[in-house]
Image (tube, rainbow, N blue to C red; front, side, top):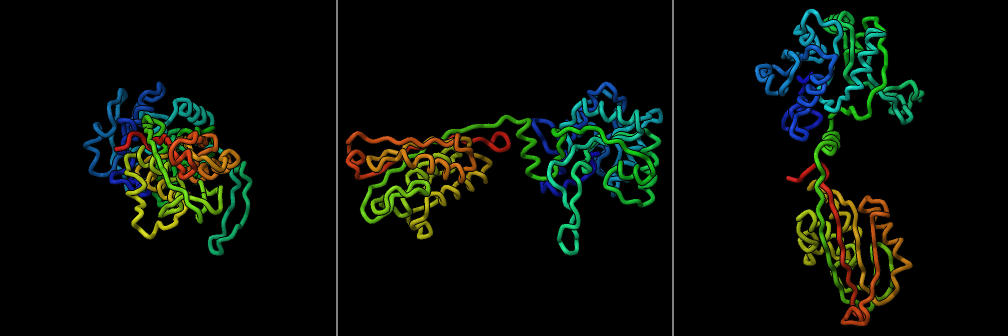
Length: 381
């Protein structure tokens, strides 16, 4: 089934024609069935106007393959697909092109279910508590035992005569969201067989990103950052939201948090997105006394927009006094929260400058940072 528009994905093309690792969703789905030993014939249902391009859209196949035109509704498209089938086919599987990770073992389970019951649907159990909502009042109408609730997948399998009756009912304007529902309405029992968590359906941009991560290698980059500020009386010394001194801190347009500022430069640098001065210039009053964690959070937003996520960070703080060690864990926890990382992926170390230069004389504070970022959905373009 590849005749839908995929509006919820918001892409420029129907989702079944979006590429994953060099092949479209449709081509991956077709190939999975073409390679299964029990399959004897393929029918690909395409949107009107695309049937002539079917062979190139579906990709190379070894089984006989027919192309049919989709209808206004899913059940109309299934009816057209049925009409295009050879007369000697006795079991039919209906699969969504938007599920490109179909496993051969799942096809086997569906075929076994059809052999025993005449109709079978793969499904996975829900893990969360399920509530039925009163649509008018927007309140909970009932709590449904979750062991009774299963999430249906495809391929859905049927003996040909069962699906024919379901399709006929659909042509009589019965309303259904899948073929199994029509079969149920036609009076047939539909077995549930164990589905596959990996048999995901690509519906939203988040689904597409997750799918790309499964088939496209992630790219990692490393960035470095550095920050230095003179210390003066009358200002607090704050590092990643932890106050070390209340009355002697960095001279800066913002709060002078060298840990966060060095990290921002490292993160932005890894994504080739400029530096802290470009995004938060000290000439802009909006950043006057801005907190380091707040700026770091905004920098993460820039990173997200470019398709990158932080993998781990390492910061070295150079400060004569006070001792940083008692505050290191709290600093790491605050950074981990903003970076959305486990604390174990956030390293903070303290050094002195052994009495050398302004840092060694306690007149300044500095920090060096390294950050590794990974592409969220394969190589960044």
